Image (cartoon, rainbow, N blue to C red; front, side, top):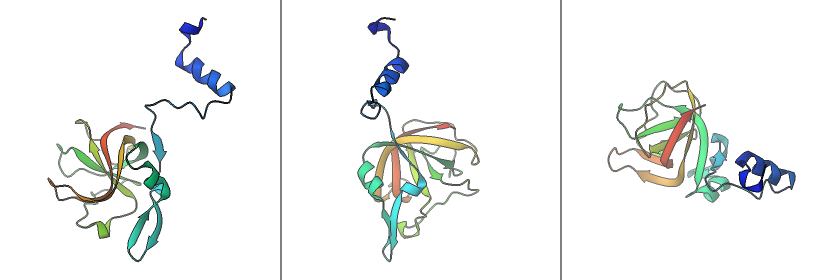
Length: 151
């Protein structure tokens, strides 16, 4: 095999063998989040974002969870939850914002999946209170330009 015909897998193995595996990270890779990573503390003023969320805001991230039933079939967003839910946790105020959900705004239409099917969602992380002007939905955490796949 010549140097020009090395596969991506061969290159990654070579970098790993040289101890460079952590230094080499493809530009398209997303940082992983879990629901346990979202909040660092709770105070009388409410939930406080974790240092990891603060660091990754504006970055591409991936998180696994379950799709809450959408409000309507043609919606361009859904709520990702840590556990399967029978109803959408549609919040009227960010003061009521649960610590185990995140709003996902899709970059393109996708067919929604069953609420008991685990999915992995990748998109750009946004944090802070925001009201969707079209729906009035209030959120604290969002993924924009997102796509998801079944796990």
